[in-house]
Amino acid sequence: MTSFREMRFDDLFKINSLVFDALTEVYSLTFFVKHFLEFPGLSQIAVAAGPDGRPMGYIFGQYQVKRNQDPYGHVAALTVSPDYRRLGLATALMDFFFMVSDLKGASYVNLFMRISNHAAYQLYTSLGYAHRQTFLDYYPDEPKPESAYELRKYVPRPMEVQ
Image (cartoon, one colour):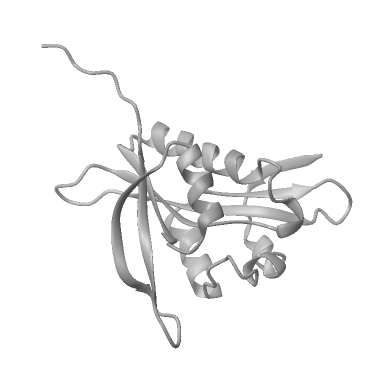
């Protein structure tokens, strides 16, 4: 049994096994703490049943409102433990964030992903995300940087008839 709940500050000390997965971008503790302060309620964690409540996956989302742009949701980080992949956890976490972004008034949700992560690309496109643009050398890997795709999924809105 899996339970989903809002991420708490103390969860940051329980997700190390997920953060150091080869397919997960590594962010500093400062990134996560700032995220909690700036974007409360936009992060979820999936935990396994049992007394230890082992973390299975998480999502960190942002809601951006910028001058002269439509508001949008941004997936800052999504990961699922290799032990729990292909069970629908990433889909559930992405669906949650899309719904919250919609309720906040976002026009779309976007994310950036490594072009080499074919499994993630298949997941996101199956959820309705589409390639928007490519950013060359987005990830500063050594010795060779890697490019990123920006993917977007627009929030359906009724058309206004005048």
